[in-house]
Image 1 (cartoon, rainbow, N blue to C red):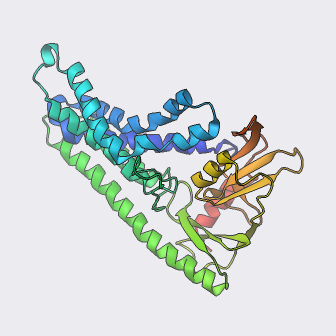
Image 2: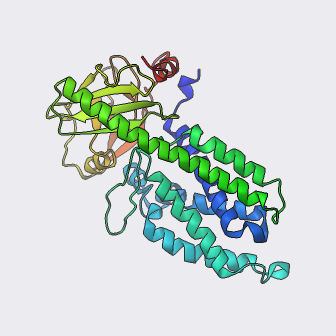
Image 3: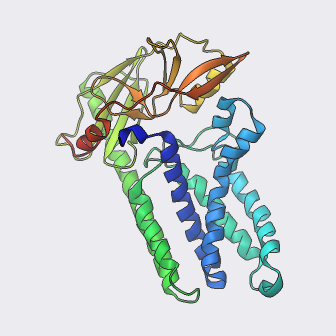
Length: 352
């Protein structure tokens, strides 16, 4: 039953929780001594602001591909962080600095709070495989270091516990800052651990490709969802993709089990502007196939492949449908994680 509930939306919700916790810590650093627990609330709001592009995209765009690619765009850029700090800082200062609260805070305090909470959001997102367009409007290149999953409890939960503890101390108690710093230090240490893992995993897959005599044009590695132990690697050749999984608990320092995915994406016109946008979003790691039973056209984002012995299932997959001259994405109504997926996932994490 658990595997049936797995969806990319679930992971996105967990990602939002992470940003709320990080934003709350930024709020405490900026204004905790002056306004206490309210600083955590306003920091959490600031940490959530960049992800409001999910809703704003639906307002400004009618095409589902436009909406999806708008996410982690300008509102996740450094430019927006600087602009947002001044705009939201000014607005919240005016709203808060009234009545009995007048002169208890300054505009600089609020600008600093929103800069920290908005700025740290896309910086953390850069370490995930999803990435972010950090340098918009000057460049639309997605920055993705691929060191940590979009949802990783090992990063979020200790940080969350520290921030919950902060809530029980008065604003003048120095322990508030101590526990806030503890949460930041623990989560940052874990992030450094994932970076070290990334360097090691890259060497493992390069050696594995060489051992298997796979001549690739490019490759990428990234952790599987919810952990940093089991990693996924994909190499692109002229004719296909080679896919493999590796756990840092494996007894060998190479992997020799590869799944081959043929690069036959001739079902749709590659020159279609919507399809180009979608493949750009996937960093050109994708598979388009036709469901033999339903005749539906299915798009698989190969950055989010689920573990399987002999087949490929992507967590991020859609049905593609023509809508006039445009292409739309629809939820894949026929997609179900394979039976026993979660058990196989946990088993593979333990290593072979």
